Length: 363
Image (cartoon, rainbow, N blue to C red; front, side, top):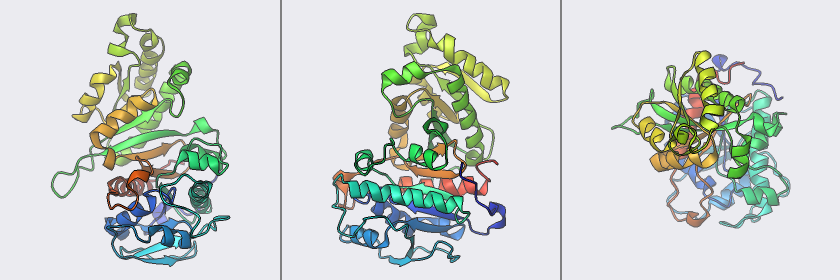
C-alpha cells in the first residue's frame, strides 16, 4: 500500500491539491481551466494541474468561452502559491504523447494513456509526500481500455496503484447543499455510497451481502463528518419495490439488509432502513438523512444526478489518500462549444480541501 504524505497536513500552511484533466479529448481541460479561474480555494490551498504541458496548451487552443490564463510548467516540489490567472502544471512525462496526438471528441488510445498517466503521476506525488489530494476530471473508459489499462475507471486504477484489490475502494457521490444567496450551507448536503458499482445488475444483486452493506455504511458514516462538520444520519435503501412488502417481492430486506442496519446501529451509527428507494431519496433531499447506502449503481446515481448533476462530486472511499472527482462524463458532444460547466469541478476542489483540512483519511 502506498504511504500517506510524509508531512502532516497540520504542518502545511497551504496543502497541495493536484488536478487532472481526464481524457484531453473531452471537456476535462475546459472545466479545469474554468474552475481554476473561479475557485476561491487559491487563498487556502496550492493548486497544480498534472498533465502534459504541450498537450494541454494544444487541446485548449480554440475552445470558446475561456478566460485568459498563462500556462507555466513547474517542478513537483515548487512551493509557490497558485493564483487565478496562471495555470501551474506538473508534467508527468506521458510516454508517446504529442500535442497533435489527441483529436477532440474522439476515443483514442492516446487520450486514455494521457488520462491514466496523469492520475498515476498524481498518485506518485501524493505517495512521495509532495501533495495532499487528487481531484480528477472525466476519463473515457473505452479510451482507457484502448490504451491497455484493464480497469473500469479511476477508482480501480488508484486502488491498484495503492497496492489494494479493486473492491477495497468504493464510490461516494456527494451533493453539496444548493447555494442560498451567496453561500451554501456547509453543514448540509447528501452523500450516497454504493455497495456494488461497475457491474451488471444481475451480478450486483448476486454479490450483495450483509457484510458488504455494513462496510459501505461504515465508510459513509466515517466520511460525512468532515464534510458536514457533525455526525450524520444515514439510511440504507431497500432492494425490492416497496421494501419487499414483507417478503412478497423478495426476501433480501429481511435476510441481508435489516441485519446490516442493526449492525450499523450497534456500532453507534445513526442508521435507518431498509427503506423503499422510491421515497427514500425524496426524504433525503428534504434533509431527513445526510447519507444513503445504495445497493447498486443506478439506485444511487439516478437520484443524485436528477437532484443536482452539475454540482455533484465523486469521492473515493477506502484509499490511503484523498481523491475527489467530477460526477459527469467527458462530454464529447459539447467539446469546444462553450457549454462546459465547471460547477462539479469547483465542488470537487472544495470537497478535497475540506477532507484534507479535516485530516482525512484517518491514519
